[in-house]
Image (cartoon, rainbow, N blue to C red; front, top):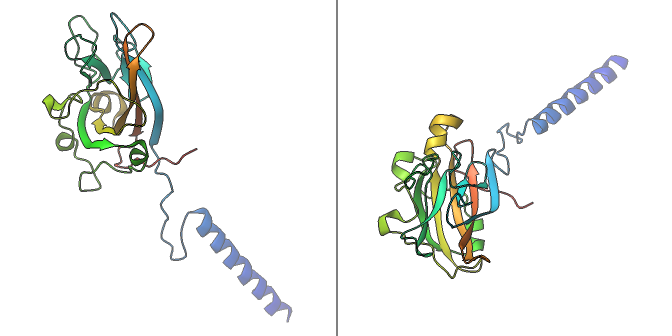
Length: 222
């Protein structure tokens, strides 16, 4: 009787350990690994502001870090540029494309993926819509700016957070090749635009990137 009693408890202990290991390793009852709710590598920047002006102003973005940087920062991935110095017709341009005597940054490639979405619709985006799970960067990113040679238009006033606005995908081509060591993709949404107290054009952008190179941008609200 004692031997049978011991075997019964040893068997129960082994079953408990096996179930516990399956739960800790993220497996379901069939032993299939479960995907996490949020893919690793997704980083969300709620609002990155830039401003136009004369000189070395804060008109550029380090998209990898989600920070505003100066026009002459070597870390910039994109800069806010107007078409003719008239405080209108703005676009985001690749960081390596500069005016005369301006310090270049890193190359970024863009593509417009939606012509007009609300904030709520932007929040639901989980993938760059390329018709496949993986991104082919040399095919899926077609321009050096958000103007797209006239196909996608400029940013202008008025622009508020309640408006429907275009959504762009981007590839940090320069940083991916020369600094990070793997492709980094993202999506960017213009939030709003106005004139500041000095009459300068200013804008803010919402950005999501995947630093692991996946075509996945779901980010849970905190």
